[in-house]
Image (cartoon, rainbow, N blue to C red):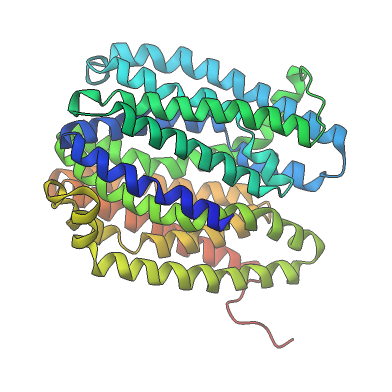
Length: 406
């Protein structure tokens, strides 16, 4: 999983420099802004199923009828959410002037959601068949990378970027959907509306938590875009994309692998589960601390190498964001792996909501004064607060960084 995901995140380090050098900073910022805006629909459609459906399948993986039921109800629920989001968001694209002048860009970016509905990552994760997710993800990257080099030749070709992303996601979504039915011997059926509503109700706390998380990540860029130019958005997007690539390269494979594993450990024995979380803290914390230190030291060189000299101003915000891989790594261990696996969904929601509200407030205070640096500071401050809060909550439940002698 780690090796395949490593390859997945090496490919963006090939395409991002090409895109950055082919497009203007303004169009680079514009695409990043459209992705952030459409991210709200992706978030809504996902509805936290990556956690709720994964937990359900991991707990009943030997019951084929139950798995077929979860599969059918989750896919249908996501389809309903896709249609609902299209009805709400597509008119907004034409009503709001900032979006209407680039309506095609937003529509093409929205299409990626079709592939995300079809791709049952949560099923493979719950069944601990994670190599399939890695292979599908790698295939998406290959398709996207090939189309970028084939289609994007100059600044006016920027629309091909969301088209390529959507095409790769839809193709792989169809393949992963078919393959899931085949290898798990599923019996898909039209789930009852009552079943769908129950799954939506159960997933509400985690969905609300993911909305809160989105407020202090994606919404940072949205606020910046409304207050500053596409160029400033481009600088911030350049630095934040790099950080997210670095974070995802480690936390995507580790997070997906650990979630069902620690869940099983906790179900079998609370002490064994806490020991697994403690071990993960030191392994992930050590690896991400080294990565963060390297980003801080070589930030200017990284920006010049990846984006070219026209993006040199992005180095200042990258230095501010440098320790996010370390902070987010611990955040994932304490929050996602610990608190969510302990089914403390409401506590998770409260902490992330407080962080989200604080982040939005910080953005409105800092962005007018510091532009993209203010956005970066707001993100780092929010992640620190949330990570410390998760640790304190886990500590109260009995988690210790040092193994007890008793």
